[in-house]
Length: 171
Image 1 (cartoon, one colour):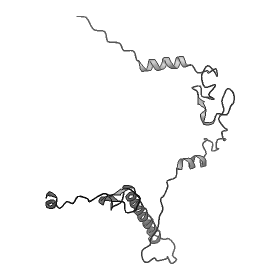
Image 2: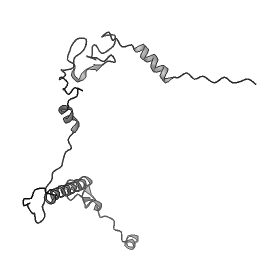
Image 3: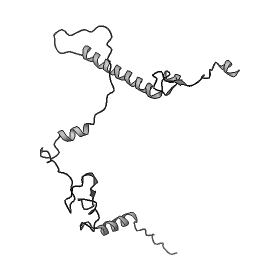
């Protein structure tokens, strides 16, 4: 009775996505699942962007005095998904890294500093600044010059400062 009074209708059953992807859709997303709806919205935004950039090229300010083409009617542009490129990897190759304008020489494969065995990605970096294989990764195996004792003392001193109470004046 209450549903008739308010005008709300309970859904008769689950609604499958209109794109037949196998997931359930909802009326809020035009009977599509969330992924299909998101893809549709993304395609529409890309089409709007492409159309606006196309219009700006056609109707943009031309500096030439020659005749420019006039386009009548709507243009349908099909745009696929655009994948972003990482610019940092391109820039690191293209730009020189040294101060004097010369590129750094190409570094060879990483090797163990003790036995010169090729370690690649499995090498261990020591605090002394060198790379070692699994056999020489410990400081006692490669005669590490790094002073772990003073490093630990400094870390403890920094983490635990000395706290002294002020002396009180006796009455």
